[in-house]
Image (cartoon, rainbow, N blue to C red; front, side, top):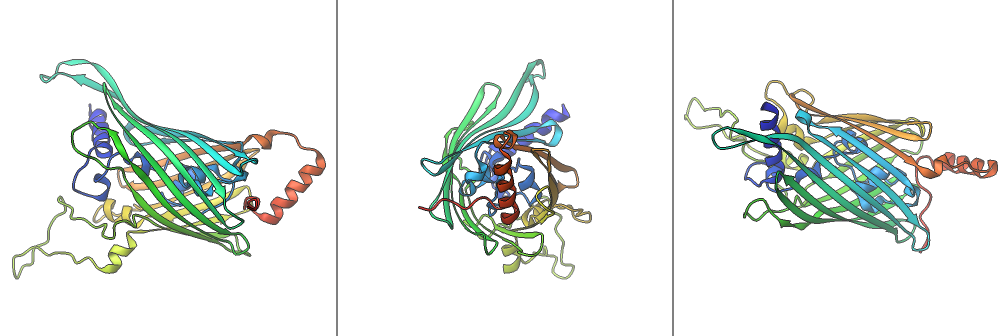
Length: 371
């Protein structure tokens, strides 16, 4: 019963609007949960990396590129109280039209609920879940600029009831490999709710993001910074359950002043990757907004902090991401990715050439085709 009540609370948080935190002002918040281990480890949001990792292209379509072609990725996230999340994705590049496509299916399984009548009589069980079907495409305009878009359909089901929505992501990326600099801009979840659980008009979690990353030429580090929710400046809110301090002189509640800097940092998600060769990476990120909203007074812990690692075992890329949301809950995400071409035996000359190019280029993808 406890599990059912908690799962129901999470479901309502994701699907019903309210007037509290920013997270309660839109539906289908599953769009914002990072089910990729790498993104989870980098603070939950990161859009400005152009390499051969398909998981980055799923979140930001403008970083899809030819090096992701014929790559498959799977991710699994055991969430709170038995809720399960994950996705499967595949990318393919077409030389004839110089475009890279991706297809993704994402799921959220809320588990089994007990069906009861008004008097408490149990009449069976039912399930709840959400499913996202996504198609993405990207094309290089020249050797520096790439544009891309995702189209997403989401359906949410609880017993015999359901809700649906359509969304799109539009992004652009500037990548100068010789400088180690990548800059991306992304408009996420542009769309509408096509059918609802209630008669209340609902919105998708629209988000304007700007990200940049810099990889040092002679050091194994990549620093990243993402600006989130740029469509709304003030992300602060009044917590109705927070205890109010009373001024002993006036007897009035003490109102905490929110400065310009307090508002600014809530838009920031910094991160770092330590690139120990092509086969082992360490990652860490920090979400200021998550820290502010979910830390417990007196016991803040490491809420807002996330970290993880990536390694290559044989021809499979394995990533792990850890994030603590609050003292009572953490997330552990595992992602597997592989390229079909890596399993194909190459002639000795071609294999030597491939290794030479990788050594020269590091983890950067091959240059985009001109035109």
